[in-house]
Length: 240
Image (tube, rainbow, N blue to C red; front, side, top):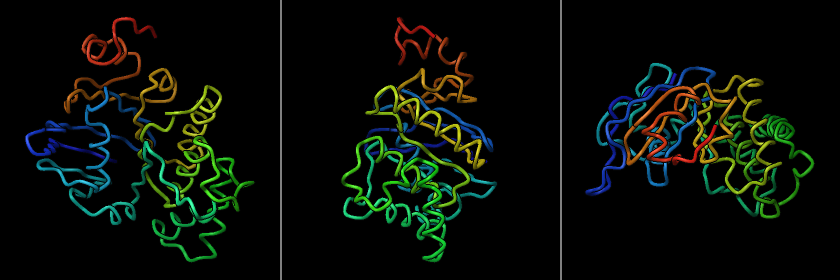
């Protein structure tokens, strides 16, 4: 479904992504982990058209999307969220989601409104549809951003640390939501996460980056027992 081959991205003398190849299959949930600065968000930026790779190719549904602008990639079915959530603070919760429906899915106003309400129900924010986004807490803002991304009608959703800043109950709610995104909508999920244990039981595979290189890939159990991953990221005290 989504495939990167030999990707390289440089920022001056810094090689942020070093010959990375990956594949995400349809209806999978795939985790992407690594230390801060390992290239995870840069890889998402290459996929979503924020950056153009210096070398390598990205294919989506068999079509070369390397270097295409973000709006075209979004219309093709790739949506993303950000580690630092970015709602339109002075717009209502409903209006925020409608932006995704209008811009990403290309719906008319009436259809955008009705579908946006459905996505708000899905994430549990329909009761706050008329509330300005600036009044939401961090968990609600993250769920709002997921609803807005879903409103673009994606085939694959790139989630950048959706659990950061959440308390244990909110983390469990977010994990359940991610499962339902795949199970209810059939949307593939590519998920950057630092809370390693949150990935267990949800992801089919985990990809590990370190200093811009892919150092491991496999099941949760395989990756968390990989000595190179333990040394680079998890630490010797890691216990599954």
